[in-house]
Length: 170
Length: 249
Image (cartoon, rainbow over all chains, first blue to last red; front, top):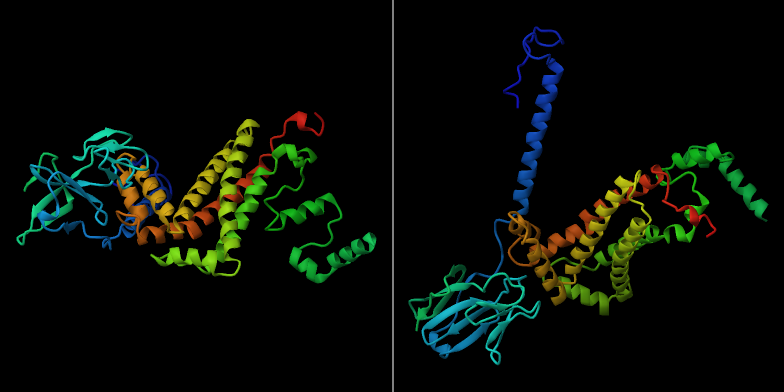
């Protein structure tokens, strides 16, 4: 803001500058002070926001081992409660579906008798591949990447969502 | 007897100690009575004179006053509960259980706090409806209506932050769902949720943050706006009273 203003010369008395639109020294100092206070205010908002954003989180790890593939029979849906993930094994292979409802974050349940995933909070329903059947949920349940570790265990990474067509060949 | 008490009070008001505390002697005229109200920190935001009809039950049903009394009751019971509560995982849940089953009179305090909180939300809403249907938002009361809306929001947010503190399943899922609603806000929603919870999940950071908001930040905000609210009632000329409530139908 100060680049467009002209500072009156030091020897000029309190009156307006001859060329500078009647700005007094007092006006100039007021503007400089307000500007500095504004910058300081914005800066303190920014550093306070930084302070409130934790840099280290003590949350459960997002990647986990889900055991060896032979734990899961073909055409099965297994709910891993601690990880809130379904491991689905079809004839094609393995995929992992999030058990967290895309509506408001409740934990869904696999209903084998109805062959669907249902949310107890607001009644959203999904197929076992995460595709929405009905309910308030706005999106299908995401798929997480499933890989095989060198020692032959399934490794699921909940930070990596993958396309629902991607399966780990059994 | 009454005259003796009265003259005793008058004598007391003449003493040097009384004058030193209240800065004036006996209030014998309306002028000195007004000055007594103006010159007292705890009274200066109250009106010097009140129309008789605005004291009638029908004029307000005392909904705002009862909300304020509940706020005071919640402050007292809340401070007492703080002596036994740690905002930490999993100690918070154990402390809540202790308050219910171990601490003497703890179950009374906890239930009083909980019920007063629910009652306060109810009364603040009733107060708002009453003021609305009376036209109490019309000039010159517009600004005080806005202050009232702020107080309603602060009340709801106090209620919401207090809901997490027992750290039970109800609390966990209510805050999970509620903060997910918040994250549906465009652009800033996700950041806002992360900052409020202090993480991606409702965990120990979220519990501590909600605790600090519940016991320090929001009550101070509420107290500030309650002061403004009361003061403006007086400055705007008292309650909105319909002429037909003038004591007779």
